[in-house]
Image (cartoon, rainbow, N blue to C red; front, side):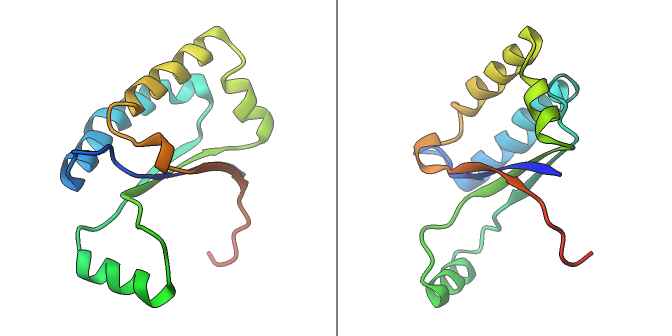
Length: 123
């Protein structure tokens, strides 16, 4: 299983609630509409809870950096499937549409992403 993991931080001026609402109710349906074309097997959003005291306490105890506003995970069966999803004109158009929408609510310069291979340990 291959995953794209995207640790998101919202654009300046957006509240956490605005960011998460847009991400869930506007961007997620757009991802869903392009999932087949891009050969995405699974897409999950993990939203940070709006609990600053707990979040800061946990981060401080570990010496962690600034928190993320959420994490997106996209799954493909293989690297070949992931690559094939953007190998067509339709796939490239879908990728561009998603990127253009992301620019409305994600601070890309502060939101790392990477491709990883999943190794389940428990469950």
